[in-house]
Amino acid sequence: MKDILKNIFYFIYDLFTEHPKSNGESYILHMYFALKISILCLLASCFLIIHSIFPFLFKYTGSFLIEYAYDICNRRISTTKGGWPDDDGMW
Picture 1 (cartoon, rainbow, N blue to C red):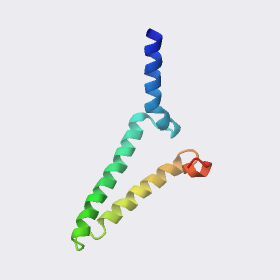
Picture 2 (cartoon, rainbow, N blue to C red):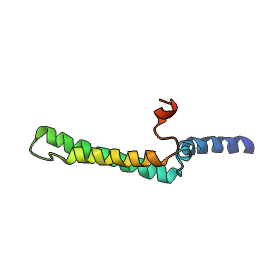
Picture 3 (cartoon, rainbow, N blue to C red):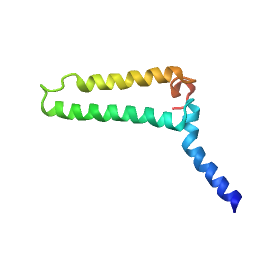
Picture 4 (cartoon, rainbow, N blue to C red):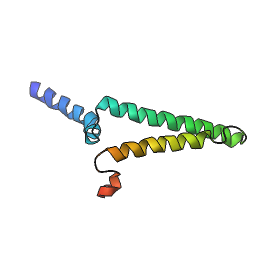
C-alpha cells in the first residue's frame, strides 16, 4: 500500500513539474511567468473591448500590451533550449 501511494505521489508530482523542467524552470517560476503573461493578455483584452466601443480611448494601450507580452515570450524562448517548439517539428 505504501509503494502504491508513493507511486501515485510521484506520478502527480511529475504531471506538475515535467513541462517546467523541460524549459529549465521550477514549477513556481513557470507559474509566475504564465500568470504574468496571462494577466498582460487579460488587461490588453479589457482595454481593447473598451477601445472597440469608444475608439477615442486607449488607442495604443491594447497593442502596446500585446507587443510587450510577445517580446517577453520571445526573450524567454530565445534563452530556453531548442527555441520554438516547431523548430524540432513538435507542432
